[in-house]
Length: 302
Image (cartoon, rainbow, N blue to C red; front, top):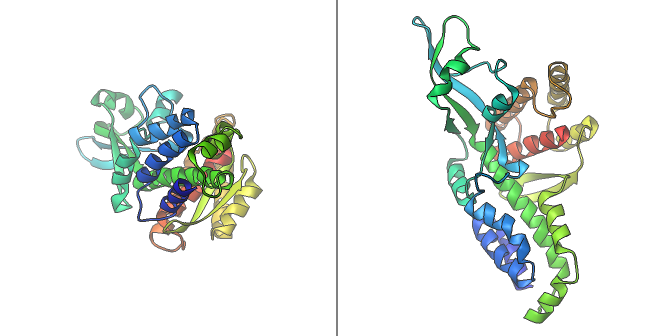
């Protein structure tokens, strides 16, 4: 089917915007008689409403930074302790719900590096400052989000949509007229296929560069050996994998085992690995490194 081939070509090319492929996917879903699946496409194109939950791949880690002083010393863009905050409020500060349209996210990533900021209302300065000693008072605070995480979102959407369209290409092979397309569209469970490829529980890890991708699905939840194998196959050294193992165990001693979240030690390891991607001591593209590590760890923690 020509339309499917066009979408596959667009998703496989680093010269075509992801939003263009989504518009054509919207047309495709109408043609095959499954316009009930368009909601996800519309949310990705138009942004997610405030009351709507975003998919897990659109939630990024954030670090709270602040400017503070105590009369003698001035701290600028300094991380601050948050352990004194209620769990829900702390989680809200340390995660970023990226509900913007994909076109906006694509604009964010034009420089490939850098940071995004989400301002914290000044009314919270007093509460945030209670975790600081030595008489420091916070003058301004914000949540810092790495642009590399936004690149990860685009990679996830591209990979998941490509999986779905490739599955469709097998069911709509050849030149078909409109009636034949509708007939084949009603002959299989498109909704189940869509949910499995777009929202499935398995990890979708994308490796490579310039969108020449090798996609591998692996269930990593709670299985460090599977996580280790995935990291090894993508050039992570034995030493760095051992440091991750140590970090996970360190966090397990301080975090509630039912929380299934990154702890400070794992976050520190992740930042260290992204730094290695930047200075090329780990031979992998930064955007791909971010997608690989964050996705693998997210699925390990469930």
